[in-house]
Length: 149
Image (spheres, helix red, strand yellow):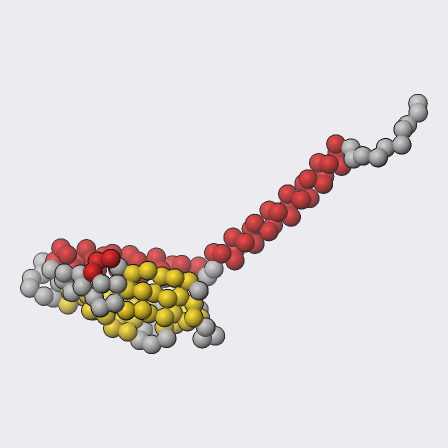
């Protein structure tokens, strides 16, 4: 039996080559997902903030009350302030700020029963003092927007 001099890849060599390339791509994709995911405690904080904000809006509309929102380094607190009437006790909500971020300066906002609040920007910093998030709170029930830098 005579063998010819081969100058190309066999099917097995191509499969191994493709498996290596796919493995490298999968590792890169997983690393990108980990980097994009960021700190899970921050994601939990923003989800909790969003839930408390939406509850504040619903309670303010339904119960005809206004809220005072206190934003500090350690926590964010939603205080219900009774206006004309109230059906029962509505508790204040406290959300702990994760250690990986803090607010540049403490803010106290008042959201009236008709949904008005003065436009405000809350600047959130990372542990090194670099700007991490800009939280823009707008007038009316339009709410807020968070931009990551």
